[in-house]
Amino acid sequence: DEIRGLAREVVEKEIEKHAADGLGSVDYAVASGGARVLSHSEPLGGFGNAGSWLNVGNKGVHSKAVKMLSPSFGEPGECFPLAGSNGFVVIQLKTAIVPEAITLEHVSESVAFDRSSAPKNCRVSGWLQGKQGLEIDTVDREEILLTDFVYDLKKSNAQTFNVLDEARSSVINTIRFDLISNHGNSLYTCIYRLRVHGHVPKSVPVIPADS
Amino acid sequence: DEIRGLAREVVEKEIEKHAADGLGSVDYAVASGGARVLSHSEPLGGFGNAGSWLNVGNKGVHSKAVKMLSPSFGEPGECFPLAGSNGFVVIQLKTAIVPEAITLEHVSESVAFDRSSAPKNCRVSGWLQGKQGLEIDTVDREEILLTDFVYDLKKSNAQTFNVLDEARSSVINTIRFDLISNHGNSLYTCIYRLRVHGHVPKSVPVIPADS
Amino acid sequence: DEIRGLAREVVEKEIEKHAADGLGSVDYAVASGGARVLSHSEPLGGFGNAGSWLNVGNKGVHSKAVKMLSPSFGEPGECFPLAGSNGFVVIQLKTAIVPEAITLEHVSESVAFDRSSAPKNCRVSGWLQGKQGLEIDTVDREEILLTDFVYDLKKSNAQTFNVLDEARSSVINTIRFDLISNHGNSLYTCIYRLRVHGHVPKSVPVIPADS
Ligand SMILES: [K+]
Ligand SMILES: [K+]
Ligand SMILES: [K+]
Image 1 (tube, rainbow over the protein chains, first blue to last red):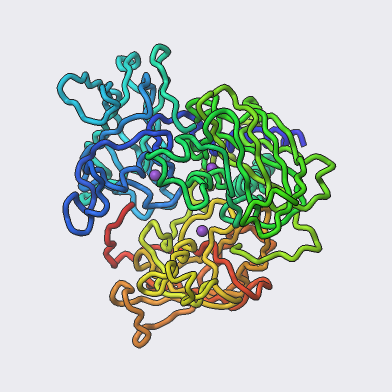
Image 2: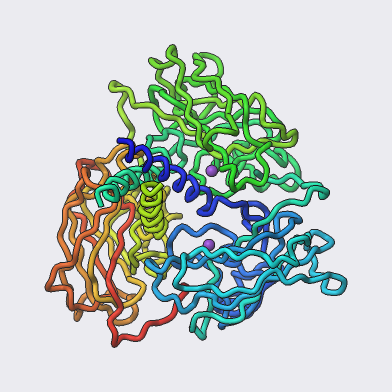
């Protein structure tokens, strides 16, 4: 009975974490919190052919792009597929933060049809963008490398990487995810979910939003 | 090995409960079961301005209202935001029931950006409405107080409150959720999910629906 | 502490399985992987009446049919309801596979309003269809019985049935689910989810898709 009680205590804590978006950690890149994809490299299916124009919105952002800023619930296919084995995605965060860590998630090995489409070598950089990110101003921004990492197919499907020490005092509201290589698929790369963890700096006023 | 077996037994039971809509308890207010919002106070963004008219349906019910009758999966933003720190929502249940308990759920603290928008003092009342709730008949209905409660930010994110003893023999098919105050946000209050537990009275015929 | 460590180990493994689509087993019938319903018997509400024509697509497939190829998250109503207590559904799998097992899932007892609408006696057969299943060719196909089973309301809500030994060397890309009876509801039967497990034969090339 004592052991049962102890086990129940451990279980409840772990399920609580699982139920809290899997990691129990605030994600400033979650779409439901107000983050969004600003631009990206060519998606699987292309930008311009007849079959896909319906999927591309006003600013050239694919309708599936939001999937990489949304929870996955264990099923395959709920990703944003980029064409080829390298590319990029630029994301406007919910608000300006001091970055602490990045989580990249792929579908679990046990339910995946094929994992060659998983990202491998990745790089994330960030900057503070003036007008709430509505236009990408490449002139006077200072881009900071947040982290360089390898997504490992042998580890758990959500992998968290700490931000480099030298970037720990920066304030950013926009990031760029660079896909350098994938796990062998030459046609496309699936991005299931990218999360950005950190904290709101004390001096910056927070604009209220849904939640 | 014995301990491992015992632990597995406890885990399986807890995960089963978690997988059964988190609580393992029938919810007569879940939208997928046929319940719906009939009316509500002013939503965040307003009833009538240019930006939101697309979101308001025929009967003045906001498109986001259904979120408070739908499961949340641990991410922030999946709520129905009412303007201000007080307001109300009227809900038609799936069917007439004898009410037993009310559950109010907010997003988990570990993933929330800000919890000042959580409801605090709340009241739920109920009544039996003639024509399956298509019109709100305020004349000859008998409204019963089901429960008065405080949503506590320090407790687990889904909090269940028993219906008052004197309401335990009533039969209702409609409830009114009154938001009296929130946890400090003056602009809006997020309602993540409201559930209504109870049982179908033996003498009332159940109209079959999807499930 | 040792017991706590052991419990945590068991919990993490079980939660990982739970998070991996509940079973941690590849499903070649999941809609997000590319599978789809090709045809079915009369749905609840009918094929042809005024209220439902909006729900029936080009090829006579109901808009709710996809629900039986999609994850359920513990809430009632997320099913494909067939009219009556018997019927059928034909499903094109993601790709040609050697079938190993079939899983039928209904809503958990603890959150269901009524379980008389659950399937009871079922049969699943399969075949290899020429033109990627776009047309149902009933002439020269060889239909193989995969399994005959009874869905038991007393067991866990996702029940897995092994494919018959004699069908274990077949290659199929299409299945037919035959509903022979349900648990007592004369009006309709709810199919929450059907999964098809197996492996891709070594000689057949895999067409890449999202994942
Ligand atoms: K996703
Ligand atoms: K919700
Ligand atoms: K389903």
